[in-house]
Image 1 (tube, rainbow, N blue to C red):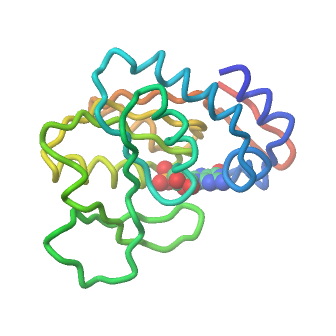
Image 2: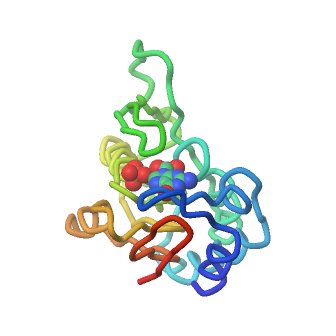
Length: 189
Ligand code: 5GP
């Protein structure tokens, strides 16, 4: 998506070969008009699939998922990071390793909000090693719901997550794919 690529080139900061900062418009300060164009694009890609729920993960996927949901006319559910390991049988739970913080979080979704009848679209800001999306896929699987695919804003194609998830037969639509980065330089696929 040219609009997002241009914005990343203008306002994104490659901290090193692995981490891209997009705080100015995507995951700290948020450009809602840009989110709207992203939502429109995901709807163009997945709009015929009968999506009944968008699932994302706390925190940075929530804003863009909400804007996208206005096109899909469906609710957004976000997987919550749980501090308590003492979880009840009322939730689906899975472990997700955090790319940015280097720790592992238990993430949960109440069983009330994912059902076997649901057709679920995953949305997240970044795809790196794929832990976040794989965790969300596990929650969808536990619920017996149908996974439609994943909409990602920025896929770092030099990290293995995208390839691994596509190899499982999941449709992943990334609006931008970064081929390589180094301090001050970002190259798209
Ligand atoms: P994964 O689970 O695919 O390894 O990483 C995806 C998650 O880590 C995303 O939810 C995102 O919050 C975070 N993340 C991964 N790579 C980056 C990055 O380069 N920049 C930022 N800001 N977040 C990232």
